Image (cartoon, rainbow, N blue to C red; front, side, top):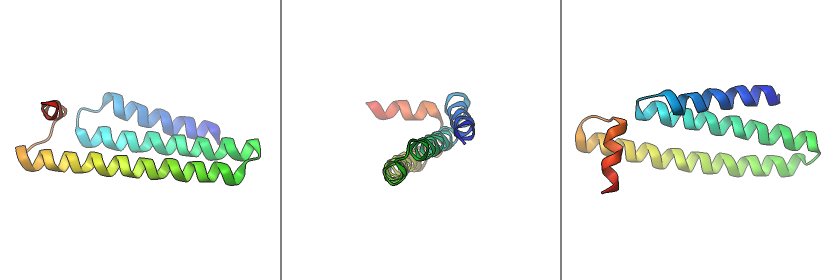
Length: 95
């Protein structure tokens, strides 16, 4: 199962690094977090801390969902303001 978690995490990391669109990067980040969550649960169960591993994975999922919600809302706002969305558009938010 750890190999499965590593493959999912690697696919998410590849999505974050190689996608040019904002939504592709966000989806890649979500897949990366899900791979980490699977690794946490499997590692915790193998170590004998089943309930604690599941609670920590639940915390990770909550952080992942809140991060995704914030990122998608920023992307939607940029699309509303500019009529298009590209990775370069997000650099202008720093000003």
